[in-house]
Structure formats: structure tokens, C-alpha cells
Length: 154
Image 1: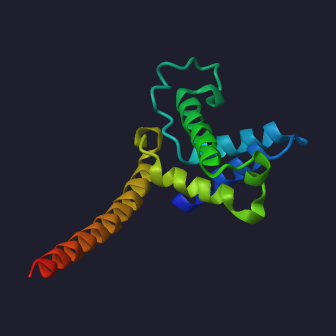
Image 2: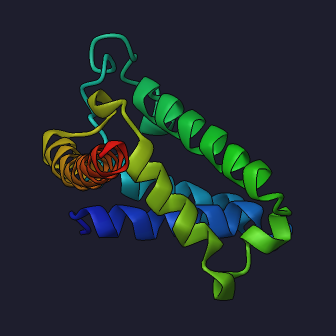
């Protein structure tokens, strides 16, 4: 059973590869398997579901599953549009576009409540490290600019 951030990114990569591949065999079944693995391992199963969802409705129809994959699909389309990619380009495993998309998705995703506590913590830690790196580089740039301005005035 996968548990880490990189495992989630790998599952999302597989999701993007299969989703954008031309119709073949059991595509829907493969996508459903990936969705259930993500649901079982990473999503917050208590995201308003237990009380609202009748017991005869499957996890695939749960609110957390619908909202998470709505975000995944929306991000995938946005990613493909921004790079002007076709679905067949996204579906090629050799060019690593699906992996890049999955990594960007996890780095930019901010609806932490959709994830279980372990994954939420992992995402927050990863995003905190990313933000620290960005702040340090901005500080260095601004200090260099100030030094250049003061030297040019003299």
C-alpha cells in the first residue's frame, strides 16, 4: 500500500497517462482502480461523507472522491492548455509530461482537507520547503539590487 508523496505523484502520473491515452480495452476499469487506490491511501474518507452518503452508495460516488478528481481533471486540462499539449502527447510515458503534471499538481494543490492527515502533513512540509527556497532567493535578489543602487549613487 503506497503512503508517500512520491507514491501519490506516481499514481497521478498513471492516471494522466491512462486518461489521455486513446480508447483501449479496460480504460475505465484501470482509472477506477487508480482512483480507489488514491481514495484508500490518501483521501480523507470523513470529508463530509460518512453522515451524508447513504450506506448503499459506493466510495467512488463519495464527495471527497468527486471533488478531488474534479480538481485533478481541471488541473490536467489547464496544464495541457498552458503547454499546448495534445492528449496523445500527455499519454506518452517517454516524455514525462504526465509525471511533471502530477508533481505540479501536488505542489500547487491547496485543498488540504481532501487528504487524510498523513498526506496533508507531507504536502504541507513539502510546500513549506518550496516556499522557503523561493523566499531566500527573493531576499538575495533584493539585497543585490539595493547594493547596486547604493553603489551607483556614490
